[in-house]
Image (cartoon, rainbow, N blue to C red; front, side, top):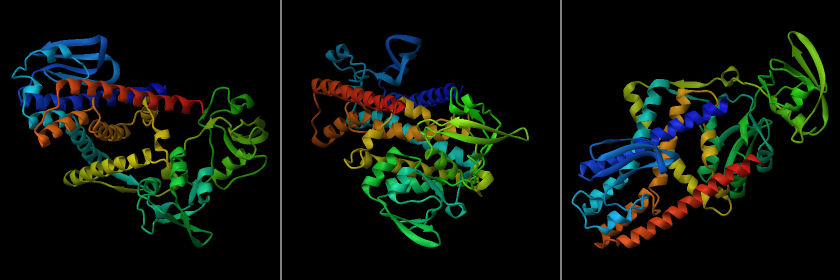
Length: 441
């Protein structure tokens, strides 16, 4: 059921963003009296799920959910309609319009994506306000995995500052370390202040282990769900059981529990649990990764004092603008990690599985709109990249024409479109192959 909910949210979000993006092209095309022949959600290679014609435009839904398109007369696009381009230009065609008009038509989709993201962020600010966890309220310190320990962090460290600058929200710490060229993080450890130095190699490790720094929770473990065919299920543990000890050891913090299991991977441990006010004990043989195969729900607000800020209607406007700008800048910063040979960010690129997994397993409108705004910014930035077959490729050629006064030949634009399509296909395949590989790691 969780997978279905994730897929449903992803498809709905993607559909909205495609329609918003293509509407941007459509509006500017109509403003400059270009004929729009088709407006499609998803691609209709071979056949169409639905179509209807209103005026000069055919509206439809394709079967291939890799995007969408508006087919503007007299434009070399993904439809590769070469027959139309052999004919003499008509006044209503894209190629007959002035350079600045063609430029606005091509950036219209990107502008709509950024505008949509800002409007959504304004709405989120007004409807839900802002929740965050002040760093000073992380009273138990942090919990780190092997990567965090290798970098120099320790369980129980209290984050003080990043490069000497205080961080307001605890959940911004990891992002700041990865994106802001951070050289050191200041922590309080056993009553003294320590500097944890950060290198590019550390950033590379963090990108492959996004949960490197987490909250340290007091230990309590009530099982909410048991994985099928897991050690816990085979041993007889049930949802609702509360694990109180392992091999007679009780734990103060949850990370101590997971550390104990990790140190006894592929071994049999004695689990003590409370079931309906009765104590039960049973041997459980852990997996090779030191796992029981159980899930538990933890309520962050039960252990930590979250801060909340409510925005009035007029306050929400600058708040939404600021968040849209900040999200765009942060996403652009990631490009330096992707193309850096040390950080090897390209190895972390993901496709549809990665994108779909960012949605929660339960429907949550706040999270849905948050993720939709984020994806809208990603779609806008990716589309404006100067790659043929993307909007940015068309913009690049129009800007060349405006600067030099020379328009690229239609044959050149046709070949460039082919190259761009091949490049995009390669990137899509690479990202989705990364997803598949990670599933089996």
